[in-house]
Length: 625
Image 1: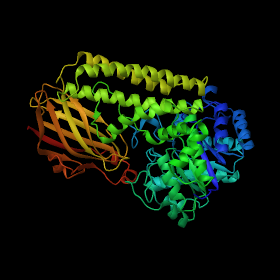
Image 2: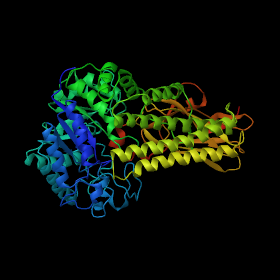
Image 3: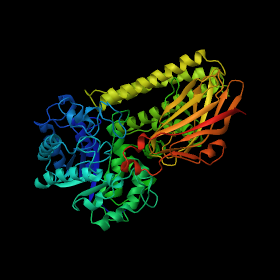
Image 4: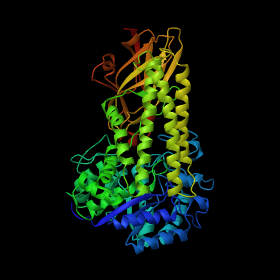
């Protein structure tokens, strides 16, 4: 690997505030790894004269920021702030004094937000009050950071162009106008501006309009094959970095902290000419604590500063800096590589279940082995405990899901697992959740002393409630006391986030809503999968309506219902089709072909702001098979 000029790691302080001591320890690790800059993702975390509204516990004072900046300078680290004035402004807009700056103020509906929503994500770019507030706030924040760079965010802006001031202006012009306004302020302060690049995908003309000295932070968090895959553009894949170079832009290759995305995007970036590499970090408010990042920061430094090759051997070299033996280093490296970040859903009343497939079996078999090896590892206690908690969390989630699925199968009359075994496993789940709670909170109090923990406490409560529900339901369950509806999905675009509503119709004219939600696979990259839903056991459906709306499209290959006594009901014919549905007849046959409901061209949702509200449905007549 070549040595990259800029080697940056981000710390997400917006989703989870950290103590000054923790931030300084984070900088120690980054500096030792050969990083030369820290991206401080802040949103509203700095309390200033213009923004006095947050509590002291939920914000940093200017003096605390100066302390962190000075500490970073001693280590040779440049601290770069991130404050977005357009999107990801929900923390600002939560304050009564600023809610009038929201694009969807006054209860108007947006692309995703329903009318009357009280939690707002985006500001109105045309309001003079928005410009006045953020102009002053950004100026105050910029004064605290000697860095010549300032990051304006500007990613994932979806609720734009809806209010009376904005609805008649093209989104590209609204977005560009906002970027240019704050760009001019920062240029006047002697700063160079960075922004995330994803909105250029939704609004391609932005690349023609943006000043060429803006630095594009090109983020790609999935596995990169030959070229990266688009974020919101139907997985469009092409040579992004060469394209930016041809247009005259400077850019940073930005990736997540998973080793698969780090390896593959680093390999791609090495073929091009980025300003440098940026390891982004998001959402550390749950079971994950800051020490979980340390081995990956060290690994990134070995790649970007020392020129080591990507791969497992270099990862072991990184983990060896946090462990005492070669076996411990390999155990930690395996834990980093082997455990997927995605976790299955939590069992509860009327929950749906991902039908198990090979990856699930592999993960369930692998987790105890990785956990055992990690429990024997010695070295940095904080780092090892962070990964032990991660393994425990994933393992417990899988155990809850597997037990819930077995119970679902038993109650539907399809299970081969004895109810006595299911009851025993449900009791074990409760014990595992209790043990996880203790480990999570011990680590939290060690790494984040004095900080509130509402997010992880809420997550752990949901898991505890799920275990209690499993025990209660298993105790009174009888074989074949529910019906079962199995829907075979085919989600060709994994970023789709549309709502699927499934309604059963009966001969007496009544209906039953079997599902209404977003039903993705257990793993984000899986596109063909089955979901199983609970339905009434005492009524045979005469018809089923599949209805889809929202962002993206959803594919269906087949649907079938099973009632006690092995009575199965399958599609017989199509009664009605509404909206945009391709090949509805494919649902009639249980094969690999899929009908597609909704708009497959993801960019259309940003061209036509009402695309996500359009409903697309098929009503299937059912017959007993």
